[in-house]
Every structure is written in structure tokens, then in C-alpha cells.
Image (cartoon, rainbow, N blue to C red; front, side):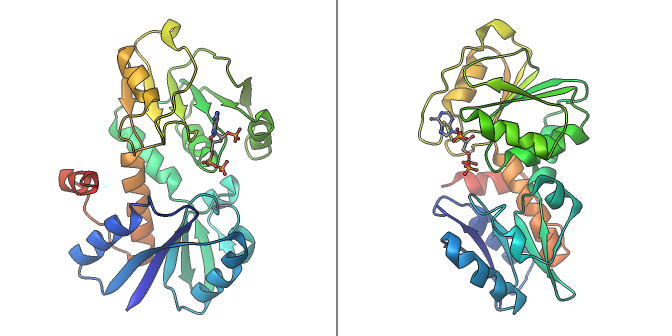
Length: 264
Ligand code: ATR
């Protein structure tokens, strides 16, 4: 039986096994999907196991999306530009790194009927997922992308991958149409100490976090009368794209998919 895995550290919280196994069953595919917590020094051997086809493929989550790159043979153009890999396939003898976070985020935004074109986007955070957000936003023709991160240097480093980024000190704010929380603040119910009240109601507050379903950041957006969205749809569609890469089948996504995931 073919085996797929998600690797990360921590990994306990990952909903990927639940979703991927549901789709495997639904599509009568004889395979299983599991999760494994790895340390940095275990990545090389793990990836060798994919090359030897002991493992059929994997997803990669925080903090290994960049770590895996030196051990792969090829990168998709999206993975290359973002230097971020969340899905590994084995194709014609080559280990290939893909980035399906971009398509996941893109689909999530399109489903909101929110047009990013010519809009100003403020991203809080500069961690692993941010290059994928920037790639998708640029593709959607955002007018201006501003990054604010506690450690300013990490935000500045993103300029190596992307041009025309604006960098803002942590704690400062600038006008925006869409603000994204891409920090880990909110995972444990922490608040973000920023006052958005002077920017008006017609904004989109987007949080990459989906557990809890509504972070303090999203509550703040809602309280101000703005549209809000968490990262659940992005999660589902990045998983869908990975499933398509491995199995060449598009799995079904509907209300039941979300209900099933929410039952945790
Ligand atoms: P990684 O940085 O390893 O990719 P991540 O979970 O993807 O991890 O990113 C965590 C993000 O949350 C970072 O932008 C981090 O800011 P730093 O770069 O300064 O570490 C941000 N973050 C975490 N705790 C924070 C806090 N207490 N206040 C502000 N930002 C915080």
C-alpha cells in the first residue's frame, strides 16, 4: 500500500491526515496518509526514502518548507520563486518540490469574491507562508504589498525574492484594503496589539490561522464591521492541489468537507 506523510515540527495539530485519508477512501485509492514529527537532521534520510519509493510522496509544513529544497532534484517555478515547498512528488526518477499554498490562497480569495486587483495589502508576519501569499497577491495584481514583522530583518529579507515590497516597523500601520495575519499570534488566543479602528469598515481581515476558527485578530475585524476570513479554505485547497499532483484526480470539496474538518 502506498504511503504518504506530512512532515513538520510540531505536527500534532495537522489536519492533513484527516482530509487526505477521507479523499483517499472516497476515491477508492489504496493508500494511507500519516504525519511524522522530524528534527532538522532527519530530513535528508526522510527524503531519501521518497527517492527509494518507500514513501510515495509528502507534504511539508513549518519549519521545513525551505529546509527540504537542497535535497530535491527539481522545483516547480512557484516553489523556486518562493523558496518554499509544501508538496513533494516523485516523477520520472526525480524528486520534485511544489508549492500548492499559492493555489490554496488564490482559490480562497477568489471564493470570497474579493478582488485584490489594484488594492493595498498589509501582511503582518514574515514566516514560512508569507512568500506564498506575496506570490499569489502579485499574481492577482495587488497594487501595493506592505510587510510588517516583529523582526524587521526577516521582512527585509523577502526583498531578495520579490521586488516592490514595502516594509513597515512592527507596531506601525498604513492604509490598506486587506490586512493578513500571518504571524502565529492567535494560535494560543494571544491578541495583536494594533489599532485598526481609523481605517473604516470596507476592509478584508484575513487570518492564515484556522484553529481557533476566530482569532482575536478576526474578532477585531468583525467588531469594526469588516469582512473576515480564516485560513481553512486555503488549507483545504492546498491539500486538493497536492492530492491532484499525487493521484491525478480532483477530490470533491463541498460543505461536508468543511463540516467534517470542523468536527475536531
Ligand atoms: P517561522 O518564522 O519559523 O517560519 P512561522 O510560524 O511561519 O515560523 O512565523 C511566525 C511569525 O509570527 C513570524 O513572523 C514571527 O515574527 P518574528 O519573525 O519576529 O519571529 C511572528 N510572531 C511570533 N510571535 C510573535 C509575537 N509575540 N509578536 C509579534 N510577532 C510574532
